[in-house]
Image 1 (cartoon, one colour):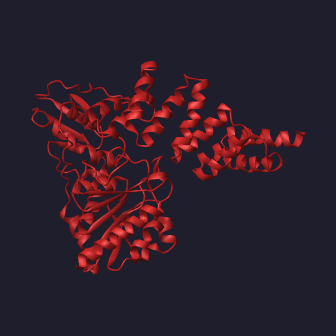
Image 2 (tube, one colour; image 1 turned 90 degrees about the vertical axis):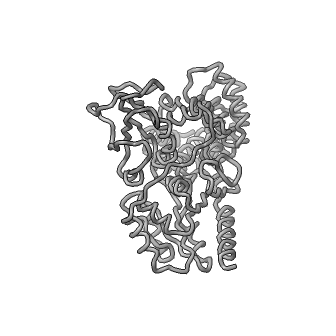
Image 3 (cartoon, rainbow, N blue to C red; image 1 turned 120 degrees about the vertical axis):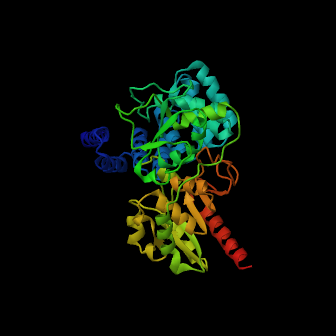
Amino acid sequence: MDQTLSKLKAGAQQAHRDGELDTAMASYARYLAQVPDDSGIWSNLGVLHRRAGRHRMALRAHQRALALDPDGVSTMNNAANVMSDIGQYDESLALRHRILARTPDDLGQLQMVVRCLRGKGDYAAAISFATNALARFPDDAELRMQLAFAQLGQGNYAQGLESYKARWRAGELQPRNLPFPEWQGQSLTGKVIAVLPEQGFGDAVLFARFLSVLQGRDCRVVMAVKPPLRRLFANLPGVDVMIDGLRADTKVDYWVNMMDLAALYFQQGGAVPAPAVLTVPDDSRQRARSLVAPYAGKLKVGVVWTGSVTYRGNGFRSFSHRDVLPLADVPGIQLFSLYKGPELKAYYADGADGFIIDTGSTERDFADTAAMMQACDLVITSDTATAHIAGSLGVPVWCILHWDAFWVYTHHGASTPWYPQMRLMRQHRPLDWSGVMADVTDALQKTMSEAKA
């Protein structure tokens, strides 16, 4: 290789290491145009595309790398990673087992085998593999987490939530650092206990039903609630005081994670309890009635196509407003957008707001969202907080799921015991929303026909 090409390659790799991704991408492309048989650079290019969320481009690059270096551990691992991302689990598993045949103690591969098996919905195989791996590596938090998700998907909530306590060691959540003891189930008579939600708004709504665990324990319950949920949670049974967050000077005797209340509930036996009863204030109801008033006689459908863009898996579970737009063409339908967030920029840019009425951007909080759901005849949503709110309200709701759905929805079936009235509609294949959107359109047309009958 001549000096110019060596310099170009070295510069591209250095830009990659320094996080100068656009520079690295352009330099890799220029280099590969002249040296197309460099498997390592094809693999590096795939890594860059994956990081940028261009998974199909990443797969193309990794396939070229594999064709040139089919037995390279790094080449196989990088390709397996993007295959796992996009639901090519069998292909990913084949590569990971080849790596494990050479390096059987590779924890990353062991973790990802479990991840792929549960991604396929093969919970039993995932649990078996994880259990065997944990016998060798009992302290590995990520293996324990993957086991938890498989157990939860299987419906083994007691063991799954116990395994899920490893979340505080897995690196994605900051462990609690509080000057009060964590409640471990001891008597609460005359005590004050703080309940701490964690992770997203949807999780808080989902797990609020387990506050019932504290009822009848002769204690005072303080609950940390973020402002967007404050009015919706105003009358949760058993909650005496709501606060923004727990501080060192808060007068409490114990604290507990809301998800750990669920663990305790299922350890005591029993089926999935009914969702928490949410509060929808009168002023929110009045606002919603005024927004839908011009559309009397129409079937009013609230839609949400994306969740929080800061959630790392949002790109897979969410779709575009353009995927929803054809529903507006069904005669007798009026769509209302319940979404607020940065993705509204594209929605306004192409004029979709003329066909999907924007009510979400002027909402004050989730109480306004809830009122709009109740004012609509149907809610159609991606897997985000609005699905949990609609499910808890008991309104008709269709939840559109990607191929590797949240464990509450599992990988199969059209219903979930967590929200009995919710209808689940699933992708036919990874990364393709067209099939399930056709199902939604057909179902909506059938609903309209039945309404006219």
